[in-house]
Image (cartoon, rainbow, N blue to C red):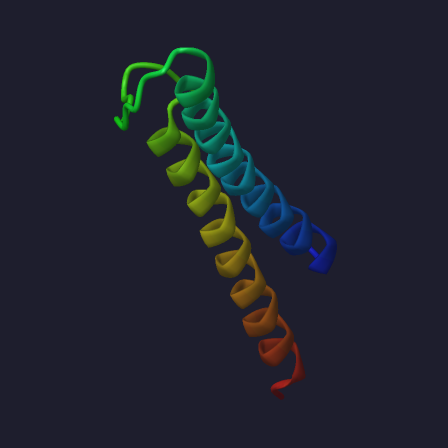
Length: 81
């Protein structure tokens, strides 16, 4: 692994979280304007649900941090005699 992998995983996680927030905001605004309804809810039924996307994004960010820490530990271990 190298720094490109950690940066890519972190960027992927951030993009997923931004998508989830944007999608939820857009659905909220569309619901208010076109349907005249003001509803707030969390959907756990589908893979496109807000909570699933947030958790998936956080998992990618966590994997990025773990791999980055592993790279640092390997480098430190390689420098030790």
